[in-house]
Length: 425
Image (cartoon, rainbow, N blue to C red):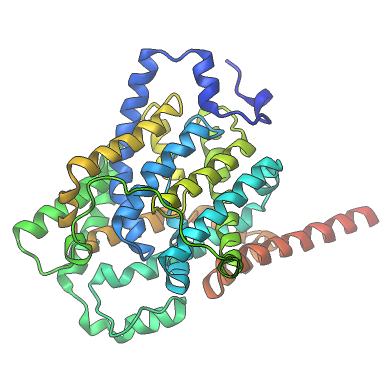
């Protein structure tokens, strides 16, 4: 069977290729089972990412349902799963804090149009050539920033004012409010994280995150624990998708939001193609990078139209999809269908989920995001180590865009200097 290398340049969704090759009932059975497995993972994670991003939990589900479906219908990978990603938490939260939710929707739409343009201009290969040390550095920086944003809910800390967005002021504010910490919330959050790690070690194929959230919710409800839940903060989830609409735009607002949209586009392109590349390594196939960018762009536009947040390819859910036996993009489409069924029939159950348990899940995500061995390996070479540290530190103290640009510039300087030395020799 061809691995897809000969057609990697095509502007053609993988779904069309799969259907042309002949799609059989046994393939559908495997895709359906994989879809159910991924939906079980995506259900609590989508809500947790939305809450951490400063929006209500249903926004994460809208993103997985609408955005995930579009990614699979139009995408350049057979097994890519699209949805909200932890890497975007910092960007989404900052945009909501500065421009409000309507500003976020416009930003996501702008970013989607930019991703479509990048794919149409065949720039997918260019994004894939961002230095590895830069990718490892900004991913580690994002993970630490996300974890810091979860300390408040994880420990049930009450702040007098708004939680600062920048890392250092945030840590200072949380430290000052430490006496308000709830030991009950901390126990539920840490217990949920510990259970996920334990199940991952004992039974890797089990849906550890869903099990941890379900147990935490049961204990909180039966014991009437004095901790915040999705219901107490956000009320009951809607029973389905909203009517799509376009946010109000103006030239001035678009100009204001352009820098944020560029950051979303840069991260979205990198994350999506990195996830697709990981999928290639697991399946022995090759994705169509430009088609994947177009799909991710269309998914972001669609997600924002339905009130969702940013969409990207998600490495963990894509890997879960592959391990569960997915054969085609139908698995991604069905995963969205299963999530929609949950919203239609079981949305009230989400009200019992403790926010500290969701914060515990994201703590696990943060730990998994950091490529610890690779971080240490890159530090052993001074050039790679410098690129890594510049990207990592600036992502923490400034922002993601500054970190990536600075890291790429340092890598370019080293590359040109090494080339000049080689030519002189």
